[in-house]
Length: 409
Image (tube, rainbow, N blue to C red; front, top):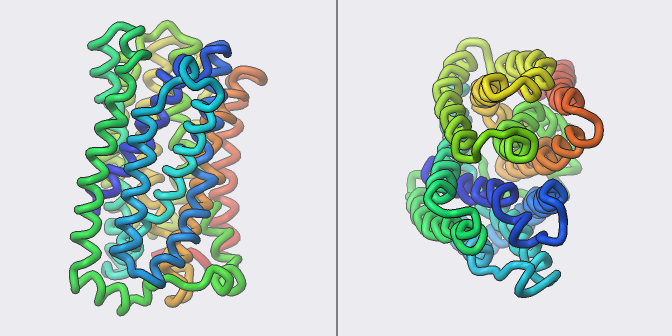
């Protein structure tokens, strides 16, 4: 399960890093560097808009053709969108058609990712003993920092091995070729899991079958809203310390790209034990309490954003390392706490659409918004943006406790 999810994370981080290092020069050479990154971040967000649409489309497909067929089509589409980006000519060759094609391929990535939902994370959290649900809910989340480590390491190696012109001409394409190959691994890993008789039996036993979106929203709309906002702090942090931070370092500091990517890789490694710690804490105190504690820590961290981003290399590195530590602690429970909200017959579809909306609201536009705030309003407003995510999480958890949602198990 982690292999497949790590491959998908690798795909998304390859695109995100490409938005900073390559796309401004390749697809937006007519704009300044910062405006080119703005345009790239706008295209980056398209995948998060497409993701819930893909989820709903592929739910219909799953009901008619089955889960293995749905996953095969979704992961094949994801691979084609990624490979298409690798082969896509730049603005110098196709003009505005290149930008349109890039947007279509990015939309296709998000659409396909929505179809790759297989219910494994929900199944693990529900099947685990009550005292271990925090730990088992954390395990699938480990794939995200692993995917970032692979993507950042590959870009760092290529960037350090080529001249800048060679990187812009052709070097940036290699991570996308690698992402296509890795998708093949993800496809076989996912299919091997979902076609196992034991998995199929557990899906039915736990009522993790797709349900009608109309019935889901009519019956469980309150839980969808709460579940989408509960992990907001984690999702807002997610792209601030990865994609936005890299753009900040490139545009407003004298740090080398490779050294900053290395620091981010170290940060991602720091996130891993913090995620394990989160699983232990959630076992003892509950997932809701763990999410709330993480949101409070992120709120405190947000107050130091301006100092850490404006205080030189050491402070910016500290911003990254601390940010990844908090990200690991909170992100570990971001998905594990939503599944048991829903009535049994709505758990599969409910957990899926809740995750999609959470990513859209919390992470999809985070790099674009943070960069715009930093440029036009000032770095302190980036901290306020992060604080708003923490407030959203705490508010959702408070409301859910009053209404009986998001059980603290």
